[in-house]
Length: 319
Ligand SMILES: Cc1ncc(C[n+]2csc(CCOP(=O)(O)OP(=O)(O)O)c2C)c(N)n1
Ligand SMILES: [Mg+2]
Image (cartoon, rainbow, N blue to C red; front, side, top):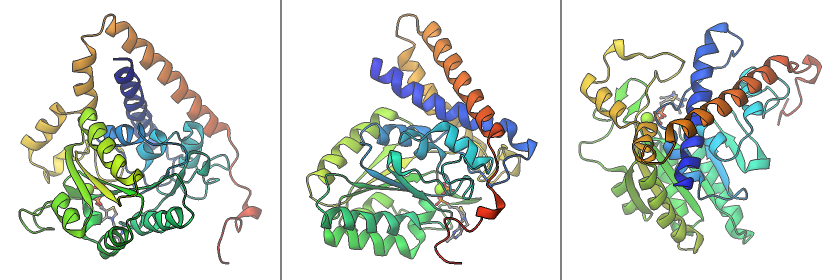
């Protein structure tokens, strides 16, 4: 039960961080686009619970949860959103371009599917250098429609690279559901299996399912048997990009929204944790401690300096 309490704490931490971002976004001090993972947090927390600091993660535009779950620094994340010098990419990247080598979070990028070849390239490096670590590529269902996905997974399978692909299938690419985008009946898991990648599909809102499948797949990857893919079925609660709910636009069936809200990862964990003695008091303490940490991170960001304009050319590969 203590493990589940810690998983709950980490999941709630990401939820409360992103709710605070949403609450303050209209102040216009965070000037970068933000893609929130609210509703999808159990994937990042479950996968990361089995990773080491040496393992190298790559992510997409929806990266906050992946960064925090990998051990990312909350102060550096919020400062990055505020465009401050103390941010994890020195205020140059914003929400979609996080990087922190201290915790093995190499990069997130805004180009859909772009993290996949980057992570595969790093896995080749790890294999050639015989490193005792692996790469992780997080991406959405939409990324599996890009050429980069096919080329990269094929190459990883042929070379038996040490990489775990994590597909967060929230069924949507912006406003478009899977049906008009992919042939009826296609399963991303089966597709990856046919490419030669050991693959498992799970309910991504059930942290136990995420952890059990990830463990099985990591045993495979870490034994040198080649790449693996976990497809996590999940659902975002809010709009694709931004702090609001957008269900008034009616692009997602009401019945689906309600079914997924009832399948919320925190709600599922709470059902189990409620059996624990003193759960209400434990939960209240966790919430209090997290809100203190979160408010302090926003204070840190607000009080940090903006980058010096004279240093604008720093960190450029070409100018
Ligand atoms: C190559 C490319 N095409 C289109 C876009 C615009 N775009 C940004 S996010 C997104 C949706 C991606 O959907 P998915 O991969 O399922 O991730 P999700 O947003 O659902 O987490 C699109 C089309 C982009 N950033 N890059
Ligand atoms: Mg999606």
